[in-house]
Length: 87
Ligand code: SF4
Ligand code: SF4
Image 1: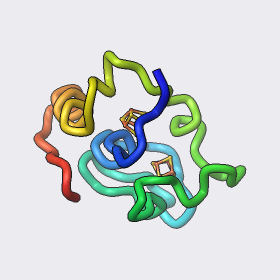
Image 2 (image 1 turned 90 degrees about the horizontal axis):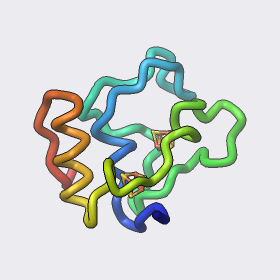
Image 3 (image 1 turned 180 degrees about the horizontal axis):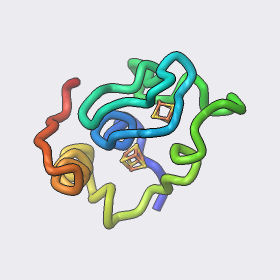
Image 4 (image 1 turned 45 degrees about the vertical axis):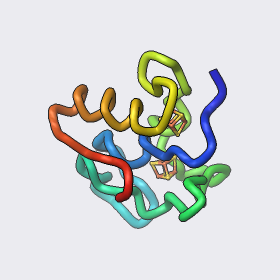
């Protein structure tokens, strides 16, 4: 599937353990990445220091569901936390 516009769940819900520019220790689950813009696009999408894990995350129905709230629920369940859209 194509990555959905105005979603950003995968840049908020999962923890990222690798360094992100400006976040040397990555981010914890449920923390909005500092590079996720208001339009839910990544500000460093083409930056060479964008984490490999970001580039490796591909939109799949299994994780992304059919709408933003699905992705938040699915990814939250995988992380064992509750994160809702609006962060
Ligand atoms: S959760 Fe899926 S649809 Fe949403 S931004 Fe990430 S890859 Fe795209
Ligand atoms: S670096 Fe970009 S793709 Fe990776 S979590 Fe942050 S906003 Fe998302």
